[in-house]
Image (cartoon, rainbow, N blue to C red; front, top):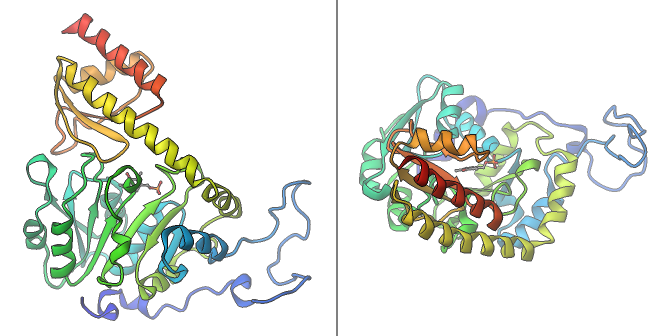
Length: 353
Ligand SMILES: *Cc1c(COP(=O)(O)O)cnc(C)c1O
């Protein structure tokens, strides 16, 4: 890995971060006249008049226990989308540096690169959406590629990327490698967080938005070396995770067994859907999934998509996405929702095929 100082933008490296009132005071006190807050809540029973902990320590201590990672290795943000933006802003000099990613993959890497005026280089995955480390490394230019984004299990293809190929990229690329594990709970594999000490250039992203059932509260996590986390913390908004979210997460983390039960049900529904899709005559291909969605290639994806919409069922049309032509991405829902979708699809065959 290049020296962190040579990877981080000089203005960020030299940045003196904003210091909030809640950053400066540590200890016990009973009178808080330091942050220009209203001493009264907006209405009774809604104690939101105080600023939240800017570093989210209580929450990180719980996450640390759950993930078996020290709190100093954890960044929490307003969804993992915040972390994606922060990583690009921290490492990539606009209109000079670039990031490399795979295709197809999660759309936010490219959007965040575009927002930051950072060139985004796409490397097509191979047959069956397989990752080839050499092809990715070949797209890297020595000086200006600062970050490689990998997503495993990958969205929208649903497959885990080959671990050995990811290790090759971590080993032979001297910049930052992001492994986005938004769907890790649905996959039968170990998290890359286990390898943070082996690879100082690794950043792992996870989220409460998928398996944990908490997309509405916006809580994303980045795991990396203490040095990288300290820099992300310097760049983030001081109060990037609001009080309600912090409280809600503490409650959610108490119910890991419920998350596990839901994941198990989703996994068994995923197998049911995979088999059922294979029986549909207009389905050309069902891609194997390690996530909570299935990518399906069909005859006339736009027609199937509109037909489902007309029946009140929304799936994701990926027909216009490069390397996903003819594909719909279908999230695994409740057993009833899945049955309704399958019954509707069977009728499509009766009507049109
Ligand atoms: C859904 C998803 C996320 C989650 O983003 P949040 O901002 O945490 O909700 C991140 N990465 C990928 C690949 C996703 O599909």
